[in-house]
Image 1 (cartoon, rainbow, N blue to C red):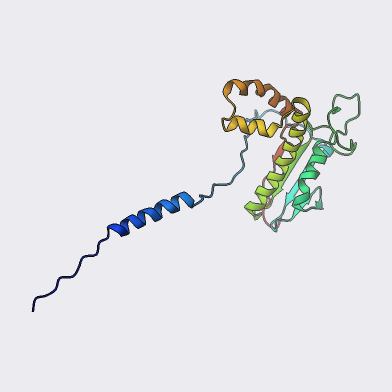
Image 2 (image 1 turned 180 degrees about the vertical axis):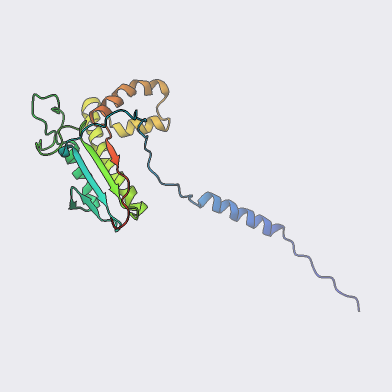
Length: 208
């Protein structure tokens, strides 16, 4: 009896289906982007230069412990309240009228026990070595958002546009170089009004 040959399977259609599935997943899959903080490091200072003396009232201290609890000015605080607390500190304008440190654009409470002006106000952040990265990012974002709120407020008042919108449009190329040069002096003016004085202390060892 003649042996029957095994019929071949046409794999051509399977290859087409696999290719179509690959295209489908490439088109529909969202690739998660890395998250981080864009921050420009300050230039190196000469080793002989004496560090500036900061008044205690011009220092806003933020601590995050190993359990991700937030301590602001030695008081427990929820993260959702951090941004407004930072805004109140930066925009306080506590220097007396007529002095060199007086802030004529600040809209805060002008509490003499708090910061004199935004150029003197320093926010100091210290984390525990076991602070979660998510909490670290959240705290940083809230503090930077406080600066952006004040910068947007002043740029809107002075020029009719928001600082962050124009800066972002320039960075992604939505505004050409010629137009960007016109914005540059105004952006720098706003940055001088509310400079980003955000200091990071060395993380504490857990349990210290």
